[in-house]
Length: 303
Ligand SMILES: [Zn+2]
Image 1 (cartoon, rainbow, N blue to C red):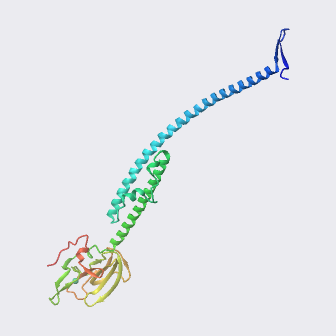
Image 2 (cartoon, rainbow, N blue to C red; image 1 turned 90 degrees about the horizontal axis):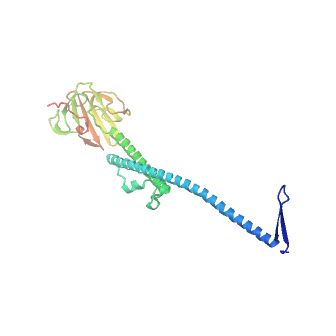
Image 3 (cartoon, rainbow, N blue to C red; image 1 turned 180 degrees about the vertical axis):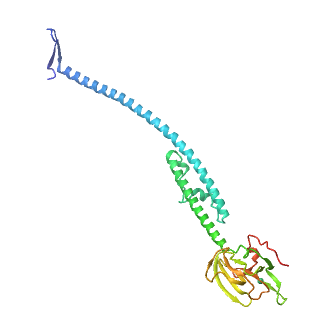
């Protein structure tokens, strides 16, 4: 079968010239296989070259993008370091505020850790975007901790301010002279030495008497010794007493503020002349009222 022969005749157009090729079927098949193989190999080589050329372009483009991303990442890392420095400064200032408000300072390790338990960032993942994201996560925790700490400081300051409003701290009159101080003194009626649990301020009848701290009028009454007497409960164990009054200018149960007019100075009760007897008590113990006149008590003292 393979011995059969083929004849290929080529006729040139317009002429009578002809070419004849005579070959066997085996040669035809061999030629066909050789040609097909060569064509296939050529296609593979050309395709490979084209592909490589395209890939090289892609690689160059990716390398360019990668290097641009690296530069951006480095910029982001630098920026992160700046922010980290600012957060550390805020943490330092936060600790100063905690000291100022009598709150315990935060441990440096806790500050570093922030809120949320163990550190998400570790030296082993400090590369590229993954490391940066972990560091940002950690910084977020540190910021949350500082937010909570500052909220604590704010509440503490508000609480202290509220407490200070209840501490007697001004003079109960703007004018007048001290006629008797806190401690032992000779009773003006009997001449005997006896304890004097407040201060006496001598001034004309009708002189305004001011409340020395925020509080509530506990009672207004008339007593044999004190005459017209008014007591203010300030809370936190503080009470103030104002005696020998001429007139009440506030009523029992009334909320009063520091510096508010509550009565008029007088000469009622066991008194030798118009004056105010003023007492300060803390947890039911008598205090020297001069220790509770923080704006000073530079008023004349009668001999
Ligand atoms: Zn007195």
